[in-house]
Length: 395
Image: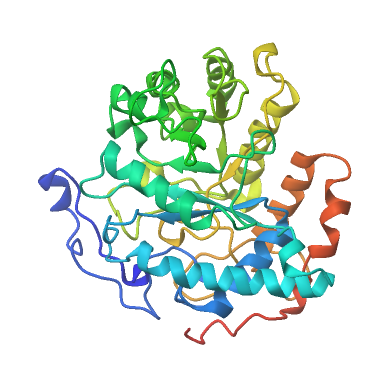
């Protein structure tokens, strides 16, 4: 449903009035809500073959975890009517089939197989979300998927990770009742069967301090538009890292409170929000992506003393957030749409896999010596087009 996304109004009517097409919907397959056009066409995220391809690509770049958007058990649909909880079963079935395929390739019994790609739930906001409903959502995830091998767990504490988007909409005092940084309470999850590693959204310095006070184990910057928020401003990341580590230790990680920088290849949501040009970040033939990764890499290579012992973590926004123009998923050349940079081979105007290849390079550097060799056996030969459907074939 997102391919035909509505053109959204501005919160000020006088700005909305400048854009006559506000309120209309895009009309796929020719007209989609994104500045780039996907190599796989305007697909359905319920398609098992599509999901299989996505998982192979993510493993190929060396991603440790796929962060899956989910609006809770009773959260209803997102802004465009997509019910992520209804889609969850489709995703899980596709993932488990993929794990069976990977295990067979390795000739390992599926029950003994450690999947190369894990899943972290990105707990999205929804109407009526409150501290009680979030606790029920946590219970559902842990108690439903606790016995799976694909739920991402902290390497030290073995607790599952959660990212909580717009966490600041719930007051720190309410979070304290669940994450209990100072004392146990009747709703405390710490030490229970639904304990976890909880990362809140970081916008600025005050939201970072509030997240630490609330009992979160860390916070993440999320946004791919450098400068959109103080926390997504790469030049300020060293300050956020230092400030985070000075907040004490996370109860779910037993490590210093952590700031997680999120990188992206660019940002452009003007086909959905035509009035939002100020947040557009051009890809600059890959240079913007490189600059964001360099800023994140610096945090790992030169951490403050207070941050010693932290798990090196960076987020990538995004794999396929097409409507915000931040995706690294392959895009095809098409009239009326932007094209990825060329791989400089004769006769090629753009390389659909340019940002997958760039991501692989940066992740190899992030993980250090030996990381690439350990993942080489999972790499796909993207250039031969194996397993990729024609771009005009609808799913």
